[in-house]
Image 1 (spheres, rainbow, N blue to C red):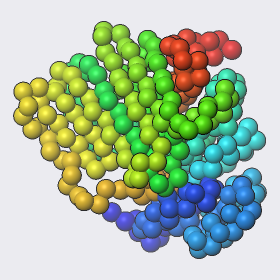
Image 2 (cartoon, helix red, strand yellow; image 1 turned 120 degrees about the vertical axis):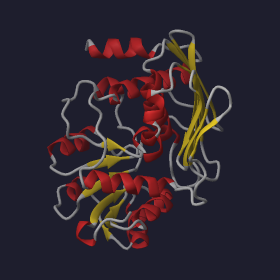
Image 3 (cartoon, helix red, strand yellow; image 1 turned 30 degrees about the horizontal axis):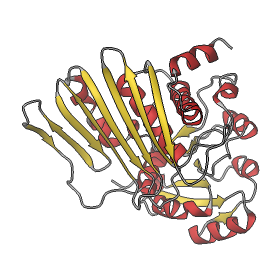
Image 4 (cartoon, helix red, strand yellow; image 1 turned 135 degrees about the vertical axis):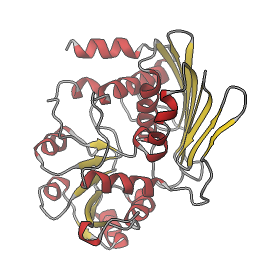
Length: 322
């Protein structure tokens, strides 16, 4: 449902030219208008702003200090450095991000734990389909396993952003695992301190013989996210086009998937989150789980580099003692 014209949301977008399709899809939503746009590369910044019919900005810090936007959307990898994070904590308007912070989790844990920080979007756990399935999960009984698949598509979505989304989701379903093992496939070698890219497969083991598998794919043509949860309640599948629930006996209990042929793109889903943030309607966790999700991402990175099993809970405990 579109927002009233009086509630049109003005968005400041800071990304890369490769993310133009994603930003155009967000800007096409009723009630959201990208009025300011820019990126770290000046030549690309000009083309990005012209394509979005927005005012060009070349300095992210200066743009964030302006008062002619309602929500900021930061998607350029590496833009969330310490200086920008400090500035965001001082702002009185919401800032959303689709990229992880530039610094390691060891640095982030020492920063002030204040409510005003960049909110990661789009999180599948906060999306409409998954929130619609929460009542099912409350009556689902024991959860035995989960299979999460996220594909970047061609809209400029990165593997690292999908990994954070997936780790946030699997932590919300099962909590912190006993251990995990991750493997990365890609043309280039992964560096010890660089961002995670390429194709990533993660296996997670939990207490009581529970397990989860996560698959992150770079490219793949079309952005998509899907989780299948299996347990006493049967099989629950949630994706961005709806929910499907089959009982343990194979009965169809909910067949809400596939009700539309217009499966939303990454930009459309992000745009809905941006509007909800600007209008103070975005869900907020009672307990901030961002550090746990980042610890899981760090464990995945270490496992990809070392080829060894990692214990993310140990990483979280060590950081909380710092």
